[in-house]
Image 1 (cartoon, rainbow, N blue to C red):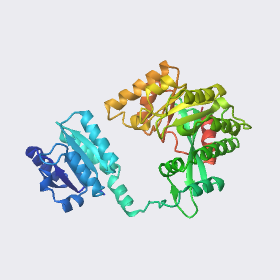
Image 2 (cartoon, rainbow, N blue to C red; image 1 turned 135 degrees about the vertical axis):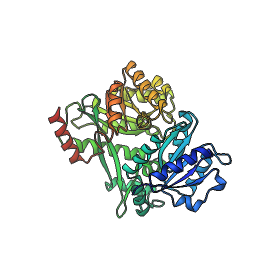
Image 3 (cartoon, rainbow, N blue to C red; image 1 turned 90 degrees about the vertical axis):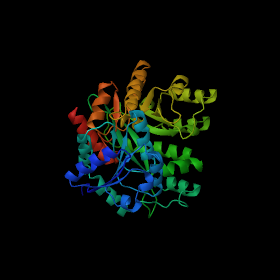
Image 4 (cartoon, rainbow, N blue to C red; image 1 turned 120 degrees about the vertical axis):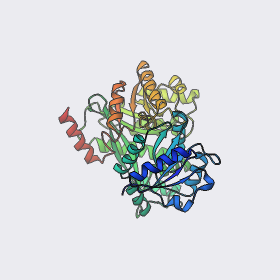
Length: 399
């Protein structure tokens, strides 16, 4: 399905008339409004595409986005503005955070060729068909009463949690560097429950320690059944609040008896709440380093992951959050954050991993910036154990 109708909210009369004439030549019908008070909501909701100017005389574009989100409008939206890139990108982030569908941005002044390219992109990506599919599928999961403490402990005991393994590769060569062990949960007679749902539940009901130890044992026991490179790094996520003396004792015991040396095991510190850099916490983290574990600061640049923590805690790896990697091409700020983080990490002799690499542009850019390790769908999605074995075999043969 191609774009056949556009609803345009723009207060520049001349620009609107140019759009209307131009889109008519392309066989696209345009409905227009010069202010929010003129909008016909029913017609807008029946359109294939919305072109929204951020600066309107009554309600501004941000207010309108909030309204569209409340109305659960899924129509692709092109943002149009005369503001600079920083303002436009902030608006794009707000649009996406509200569950709306971003179709592109037009920074004034722009040419009609840019409009045609955006329309072509929307058609090529089949964005409208994807939206129709989403509207007809029910992917909701009812977990109001499913994830209490007893149910979570039962899920661990009954092995309802499983693992997927996402490869990490050397950016320059594509050779396998490591794998991140990612937990999945499927309860009996239910669809899979997202980590975004079960991770907060594990934290709320204070089951995170049991879960973490189970996942580490599961990963190490499964991975030693397949052929893997000798120096493969194996990464597990560790919630900051579980780190205490008792947990460390259990962790050391948990990792014994497997063929993987401790210095190949990476503990990615995730921060569901602020990691307090107390002397005791610093001592415990230093103990992990002394034992030989690799300490990785996950999602660097977001939340509480800051330069202060690199300076205060003995991390030897950082992971650049995918939100910056995936927006490098469109946002100068993201590009600067990624390049500066890589430069800083290299100066501090920290291993840096770029997460969320999904396109050839991102892969080539990351490699050119001297980021040693990459992870993301461009190389491989999270794999089952057997698929990881196949991936490793092919990777070894290629390299």
